[in-house]
Image 1 (tube, helix red, strand yellow):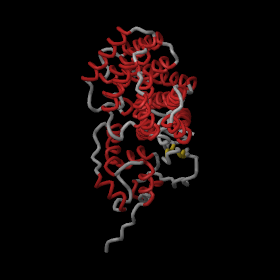
Image 2: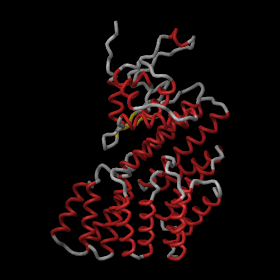
Image 3: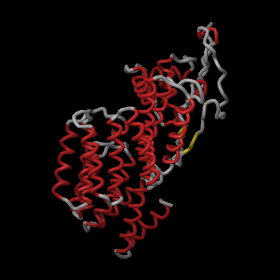
Length: 426
């Protein structure tokens, strides 16, 4: 007689809170499988449905460990029932800790304003770290990148700092072999790099520098020049915002030199845009244009499957960076045209934080170029993305656009925009 199936409600709730569809979850599980085992995973949406219906009470390691990394929760917290101790060939099985318990596994959840649940990666308090723990750390960092693309950094910056402290605590209190050590330094460095970016986007510049200094330290321990280049790219972008054009150029060129002959072309494209931005701050049009052209050439050679943190760097991003260069040089008509192209190149529904930045930039450039109606339309499109998207850096630019708009005189359409801004951006 067949036993009736019991749908896995805990797993269903975790998937809903994560924002994944069944197809997306299967793809994420396969990506984590490749990071953990070195070969592509074979999970499908059908297998996800089997997990949800209760047909699978305890997934195999090849599915269970990647699933834990993706959702940031242990299998027992996801509604799965561990097999009897006898079936585990003599291994000691510890009873799962209550969901609200922080020790021996440190678990704390953070809810963003968008209603999205994020959680610290499930890591041991003591004992030995293995590659499954590395997979969880990488899954958590990829989740931060995903949420930043969707919502921006306002709440994520603090969460990312807690992630870094959580992983560093585990590293200090656990043991690991040499292979895991290298992977741990790489993973923690990547998380520090992302935490720094989120702090920068939140205009917490000193906090960003602290995270990036940590990321550089771990990059050297892992002997990862690509990670160093990622951090230098972020630092160069920060230097541009602070008005340090020559410093921005020097940092980006150091990253290019350090990875010469072995970097992904998409990373090359990003670094050349950083050089271009630095030149634009110092008013060097010719050099700026040369660097933008080189960035386009590199992007043409890029792989269609970049690492998650670099996925944003596509045609729309390069065109948007060109618009920013023109803006810095005072060429507002060219900046406006570049922003129009960037808006056209944006994919529907992806990289909403970048879409918000593009609309804000277009509004600012249209106003400076003498196109107030287009400026207002772009400003309203930016407001459409608030408050779901929260980038303090670009929200500050939108606020500046509102001030410039008000200084040009009062009109019903201007008053309507400013009133809507006060309500939405509050």
